Length: 412
Image 1 (cartoon, rainbow, N blue to C red):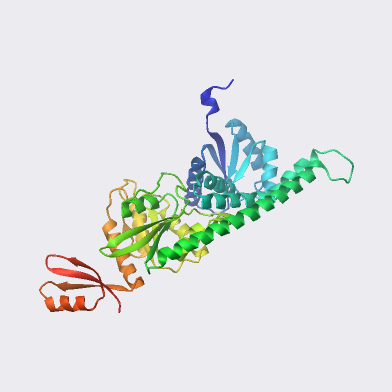
Image 2 (image 1 turned 90 degrees about the horizontal axis):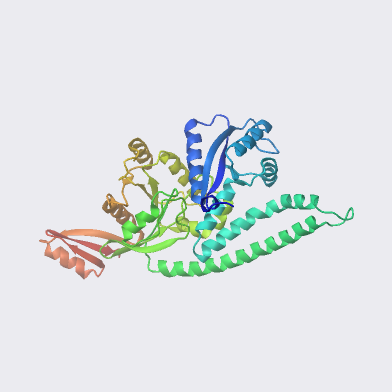
């Protein structure tokens, strides 16, 4: 009888990194670190990571026969419960690997979808994740059916149990996909109505976007003074959160927190989470948040730019924010390179509040023309100019200082 500790031990997983010839050591290390973080977020324990250089894609196993044999030996040696390939696998290839290794095999797309499934909280996120999972499973039914058919008996030429079963499974899954799409369409219409109400006052909108676990939710909490769910794991946020933020007296904007990006995000998830990600595409300004303590900060910026391009949001005004500067591991060299490439990035710490006033000031500069407003500062001794400003009827707010007053004015 297994002890309690043995029963509760996490799934022991071997990570396989198929590497194309010419891949740099830095890129290989970046891929490995990201994949390990994904597996840990999923709840698995990575007992080994193995890189195989692809010498030409094997049609049956992706990796070569010799490499497949090595992988099987490693599975036995490390007493693995499962294997995860850091790439997309064809359904037939996945089935072949499972038969040879005698273990469940997961690819990168399936891993990310499973993580999304674990962390979805709202009805919309759960529906979107269920749709992505169903769409991923549909092409894999054919391979499952082949195994069922081999086990059937019966008259030659007749439909066997396996074939009948696969047809039923496929029909059921197609019905599930249709139903999910209808429910998601309904939720999207409801959310579109809510968005129109929010945006009806001509308010500027800002979307926090960027690599997963860069600290977007923590930054939102620091800016708004209201707690947003944040966790030191990938994909802590799957549901779009909108909050009103005052960036100056009389000047409020909308701030959106969005799902984080990773490299090679499955297209099925980009499609399924379009309604979540579209806040980035529809926002007036993008606040791109990067983790300044990450070794791969430049790769994170490239990934973010790539996903934004896929969403059609690459040409939007943006503010580059380098978060977590309070950490000792903050990468100053990469920080300078990214700042140079981005053009005047802002260094902040959501934890200590450092840099947040500068970020709000930058947001203010971009929000004013969007909302049809301008700022005007007048010396207190110039009473006639102050009186004339009040007579215009365009004053939104007045911020009096010791020597001057700054008006927020609507354009005529």
